[in-house]
Image 1 (tube, each protein chain N blue to C red):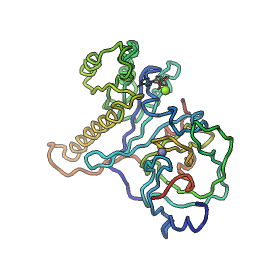
Image 2 (tube, rainbow over the protein chains, first blue to last red):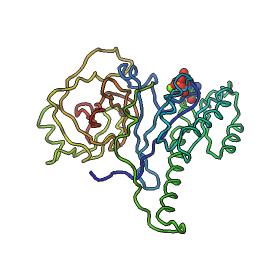
Image 3 (cartoon, helix red, strand yellow):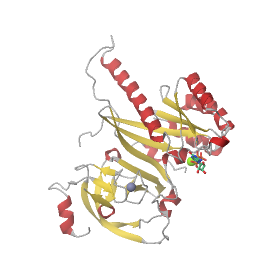
Image 4 (cartoon, rainbow over the protein chains, first blue to last red):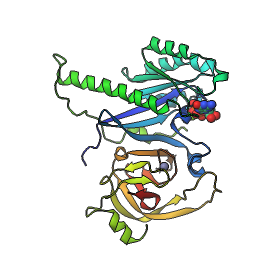
Length: 210
Length: 121
Ligand SMILES: Nc1nc2c(ncn2[C@@H]2O[C@H](COP(=O)(O)OP(=O)(O)OP(=O)(O)O)[C@@H](O)[C@H]2O)c(=O)[nH]1
Ligand SMILES: [Mg+2]
Ligand SMILES: [Zn+2]
């Protein structure tokens, strides 16, 4: 069958345990239709299709576990990731300080040009805040990445964050394609369709960790 | 839904789905028209009944044999995959997370959406 989309991006959520990664991706809420059967097994990933500037973009989004004892399994997810959401909890100083450790972890295990974004989650709990928005912004500037405060609970900026990350990966991919199709000089040549591997990824066969 | 007359009206001469496949509960788009193939699976896989969380859990399974088969998981518009149970991953709506609406076979990498657990529009 002909390819029905333009881009496929694999995205990951990482950060300390309890910052809200799973809630950012999954509902599991009281009003969810989710059966006990599915809740017990847990969800591994989601595939979502979004439209970015008239291009059809498929996102495959994975959750990871923040606990130390899962760390080696988590790094296995880094392979092939094109975008990573670094999540901390604005009410938890420690989770913010640990972002630098997560960044180091990414540098050691993920592809060098992986697109990153910083999320300060649980921004709905204003009275318990330990990390100001300004400090989040500053850290993001230091690393040269984008930043947003989110709330999985109040549905603030969650979708926007995924769109932003996807848009940045798309821009990077298109820039690379342009350079590849015109190696001597970057110019206005027609882009070739990106070669994205369509074979079932091997990491699908690994054990689940949730 | 299980009547063969109804199934005939949902697939074209090549067995492809004529209509968009949507979540029954929230209308999230699961498959575009023409992106899956009808199969009748003789050894029916048992699927737990879908129910809301606030309903009392019924330990009941349903035998379903009419499916839309999807060759490549990235054909899906929106879908959620459960963690692995034996050699399967159960499929759920990516938006409201109701499920299972089908399953994914890790051996042959094919996915199956139960006709009776989605709506066609
Ligand atoms: N107030 C508020 N609470 C949240 C929010 N997001 C998550 N939580 C709560 O934070 C707790 C932890 O959330 P999880 O999503 O399980 O955290 P996690 O990052 O997946 O943790 P690990 O799986 O252990 O790595 C839960 O009790 C959530 O209800 C949010 O945006 N606001
Ligand atoms: Mg989690
Ligand atoms: Zn739904």
